[in-house]
Length: 279
Length: 170
Image (cartoon, rainbow over all chains, first blue to last red; front, top):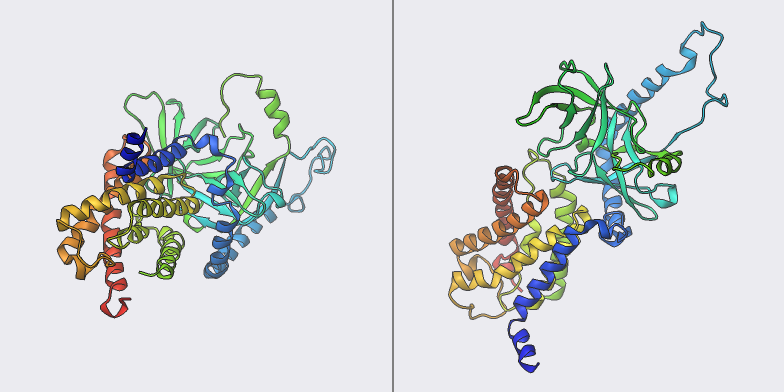
């Protein structure tokens, strides 16, 4: 026993290295088991405040652009208002009618930290549990999908960006409703890849891609981007299309967090079915 | 180096890394990791376990900011582990002046370059391969290692020049 201690002491540098390295690797490899450890995510309060403070200063630089985006978005919403349309059919339903039940509600939040240059990118938002944000809520902007909430603290939340290798979004081609899966393959943050499009589907450059609504996270018809190019990859039987994203992830500043009010009901029903459900 | 100076440098490098360097977009490939300068510049006579624990903690802080699990911790601990061996290999023996830190003066320009470059490459290798998590796009990942490593080296050398001016010596 004494010899063992002496041995460990003699090579303590190596053993400590081994220990720390094993801890780090375990933590990295078994990330799923640490989802509750808020200390280790950017939603933790100290880190959140650092980003928040920095953002209060640097945020001013983008105000002009953000205002322009908000104006554009307001304009699109105005266009959709009922008052713009002449009602020709008397048998229309009002939105307040009891046949409509609200499925999604929205919260706005500010992005206080983001990255686009890593393989797995994250956002940090300046709102958290106290504001009603919960894990697995969708995050969108006026014109695109931004990510999914992963962790929340009282005042902050960290979001898995669309630019993350684990992030798969079910999307559809606007003109013919064919479904595919969107997953970022790294590199250019302005482009991503939509795969599993059946090869008989007619594609053209500029086709719009929307969320399919086949998920618990994003509503249907959130604009994602446009098709730029497509190919059949070696060994595959499907089209893989390059999609130009509508939002510039490097300039995200204001986002909406989507709350699916019927999530639990749907989840309960679908949990009876085998197989996973993608976002 | 005094404790206070060490602490300031730690905090300064972390903030510089997470607030400035991580937000500069350079082709999607290049992300310099200047914070490793902290481990590179620690005194020659620092105890082994201090070195390892400081490196682990530094990496973990960066990880928390970046939401990157513990990949920076793993890479930085690897760097800290290799550091004494690299110093021994390059200088043959421990420098006489015990309190000294690695610098242009104590190591000489060429040795300092080799020292920084080799450890930075090791660190980036661990970091970017852990981040990619597979060996599929080996060339892309290697590109990131080399390009980011080059830029990190540049920043680190500038850092050495700034931190170790003769007038700034304590």
